[in-house]
Structure formats: structure tokens, C-alpha cells
Image 1 (cartoon, each protein chain N blue to C red):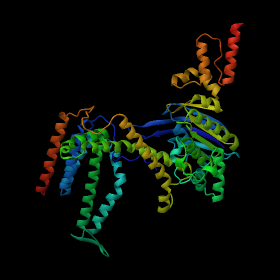
Image 2 (tube, rainbow over the protein chains, first blue to last red):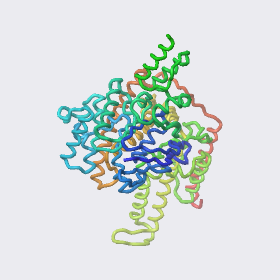
Image 3 (tube, rainbow over the protein chains, first blue to last red):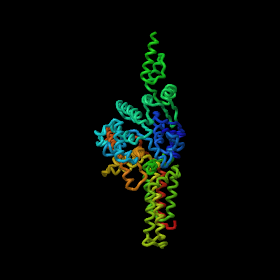
Image 4 (cartoon, rainbow over the protein chains, first blue to last red):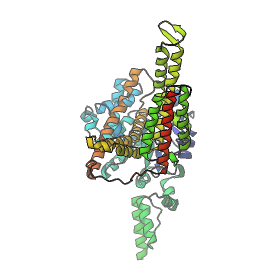
Length: 292
Length: 270
């Protein structure tokens, strides 16, 4: 499923002294199966954008259209039964998703989504098991445990499984690694990569960690003050708009940043490298050429 | 469902002379105004109240539309009061009769009278919270209650409790909003269905909300203790409250207003 965002705007508390423009004419397309990273500061409109895509906020202006495999289109940013049905194909994992757990057991909590989709008990359980398996939680071991007894990282996995069990075609994750230690952080991102491969879905990842987005995303969307500033492959965005990104106050991923500093200190390196391996090669090349 | 659309008890930022009044003065004047509404006996005397309230609203520069939004959550209560008065007042000329229910002239009069009184009550009190920051309000309250501390009233503790409660209303509303959205995304339906289904649909909202509230309370208690909070004794304030010229004027106007309202009882013609 492809999702097209057309000229989307969102204004909070219109007409009041604290009126804020959270989204300002944003347009882009999420291709089927694509991994898009959205970065920006706190208050740049990232969360508003993804919540609009998930149909949880009504846009003030513009619309969101989903294009199905057979070419038919549905406007999802409007009320009505058909839109609601299509919206179900968009799953969203909120920031700190573990705070929405409520059931008595892990199994029941993960079944909540499928239950609301009207599936039979067997199907619910089967989907819950598959989802728990995807996030690396053993359903036999932890299925009957209260979700409140799990550790922080496990709670978050269970909460993500709760969304996966609904089998969305587009999965939105709003800062899924917030508040985790480095190990948990890497585990979650690896898990997302695995989910994408196994379930063949588009992924929209909201983050302010440049390195994560650079490493995992096909394309990066940079938000600032509710406006879409850049959209392109990580390489295009980070390497071509380095100065502009710095001006917004966003970090550059560690590799180009390191190369940039070397360059500033007089070393002849190309700072348009994103991955660790090519960065290392580039430094080796520069050191070698200096020796000769 | 918009949980944020609650104006009752919300602050409306501004720089008007009403905003700048000392919170203590505002509390006392509001109190006097509320009492005056119960002193009033006739419709014509209500004109005085409306004039007083209207002047304050105009001075505060808050759009009337915003103030009237405060009525939304209590509109049901007002209508209920009016209906009860309409049907159960049985004195006066009978206008219509249906079984045991009679509608009398007095009934209509009482219904309108009570309705107007309630509306004015709500406008008056929401005007105070709209023009006063919650922190100022509780500070003022504490100051006003402090003489009673001598007879054992825990003025500071009460004010602190109120400050914390007010401080966390927006936080908990945000939290509610977030959890509702998250559960909606998982297919929960908070708006449709029978009353029983609706009540059941609240569980996925209330359980996480309570868990959050306890977590926040624990964190806050820890943070307060870490900064050596130990109650009100010996605490000084960052903002000292001082009465100014505007406050004197406000008090004078309110006193004159109260006098007029009391006088209106003596003069049935007014």
C-alpha cells in the first residue's frame, strides 16, 4: 500500500492566543515497502505528522490518500466506514508504548487489537503468538504473566507486538528507542529491520537520532517548524545539506561528522561517507596518500 | 473526542488590568460576586449583576465565545435545574396541565431565574480562573487562609495540594489523550456502542491512566524530597504579593456593587 500525503496542514487551537501551526503544507509519498525516517527537533511536527497518517488527528487542510496495489485510491483523512477500514492497515507504535498496556496477561494484551478487528479467538491467539515471536518474546514462557511484571524492554516489545498482531501494511514507530540503554536501543532497531523483512511492510520511523535513521532508512525526511525541509536518501540529505542541517541545529551522523572534522584540520578526505566501513576505507586511503 | 476542549479552570493568557489584579483581591471579589447572585431577588436586579460581570469581561479582553465554552460541561445540569423548577413549582397561575404535572407562571419564572443565576455563577467563577494563573490562585488562597493556620488549619498544605492538582490536570489530560489515541489505533472504540459497551471500553484507558498517575506521583514526591521540601514552615516566596492602586479600585467597585445589590432588595421597584 502506498500512502500519499497531499499538502497537509494542522493547526492546534485555531483562533486562540496559543494557536500553533504544527504542520505547514507537507507533501510526500511513502512507497509500498519503503523505510522512511523522519527526523527533527522536539516540536517540529514529527508526531503530528505520523498521527495524522494513522488517522488519529484530523488535518486542518490537505488530505492523505492510500493507493492500493490495484491502483484504486482511498482518502483516509476523512470520516466514514471505508476510510476507517483502510486506516486499520496503518499501525502506530507510540512513544513509550509500554504505558498503554492494561490487560491481566501478556497474551490478552496482544490479543486486544485482533479482538477489535473481529477475529475468532483461535485467530487472535495465533496472531498474538506470531507477533510475540517476531519481537522475541516467548509466548509459552511469558504469555500468562502480567505485563506489569516484565522489565522495561520486555514491556516495550509486548506493546509493539500488540500493534504487529493487527498485521498492518504500514507500521509507524514514534521514537521506539526513547529511554532505552544502548543495548536495548540496538535490539529494538534490529528487531524492526527483521519485522520489515519478514512481514513485508512499509515502515515510518520517527527519531532524532541521526545515526539510526542513516543506517536503517531508505529515505530521510527532515522536519523543522512544521515544514518539510529535505527529503531524500540519507546520503543525499546528510552529505549535500550538511550546513543547512547544522543551521537547523540537527546533528550530522557520526561518520560524516568525523570526516568533516578531519577535513577541517587539513586532511584530504571526502566527507560524503555514511557507513563505518567506507569511512574507514576513506581514512586509510587519505593516510596512505599522505605517506606517499 | 477532544479532551482538551475544557475551559472550566483554564488560564487565558493576557495583559489586561483584570489579569494584573492581585490574586487575593480577585478571589475575594469573585466570592462577593457569587454571594451577590444569591442575594438578588428579582430579574431587574440581575441587570446589576450582568452589568458588573459585563464590565469585567470587557476589561479582561477575553473573547466572550471563549468564556461561554465553559458552559458546555455543565449545560446538562443547568437544563435539569430549569426543567425541575418548571415542572415542580405549583404556585401561581396554571398555564397548562398534563396529568400530575402542572406548568405555572411562577414555574416559568423560577426556571428562568435559576437558569440565569447558574449561568452567571459559572461565568463569574470561570472568569477568575481564566484571568489568574493557577499558581497565583493557590498562592493567593494560601495567603488568605494563613490567618487560620493559628487555629490549626493546614493552609500551606492545602494550597500545595491544590497547586499540584492544578499543575497535573493538563499533564493527565495529555496522558489521557495519548492513551486514547494509542488504544484507538489498536481498534478500541470509545464513542459508539451501548452504555455497557462504552463502560467496558474505558478499561483500556483507565488502567494505563492510573498506572501513569501513580508513577507520576511517585516521581514528584521523590523530586520534592530531593529538594528538601518539608512543608510550609519557614518557607519564603519568590513573588511577594503587594496590593496596588488597581486593587484598591477593584475592591471599592465591588463593595459599591454589593451595596447596590443589597439595596435592590429593599426597593422592589428597581
